[in-house]
Image: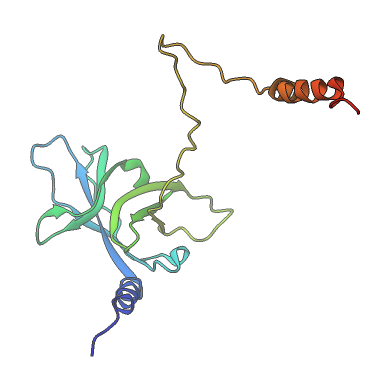
Length: 193
């Protein structure tokens, strides 16, 4: 039995978007020492491409940042290959200080793969909320707005901008027809016998 290529494509697309996905976010302090410490897991985030607003932090481990570090690198890290698998961002260690709740932002492509990770510490206001834990925000990659271009500029052979021709009036266009009609009317149309 031969399957329709369109049916195969739809089945593949359904498999790609099926179910929630998880991403392990790592953090690495950037220190003045020559070998930087290895990245450690910061959070595990669950997200679904069909319901991005329901992204949640499954696990969060407060980072152990040395006093000599003022910046940290955040991204998705493959511990087996020992390399970053997504774009990384640098953030201040102040985002993880007391009184701040980290908001972890994942940028994903249309298939759900993580493109980059960033983190922003949001100041906690105990009077407004009781939810002090870290939050996850997932944004998908979308095509940006395309510019609307005007008509191209037409230049004369001298390199100057050519002015568009003025539209002629009815009299300027058809004066010769009016002249013929007046001539026939005045000539009398012929002699009588």
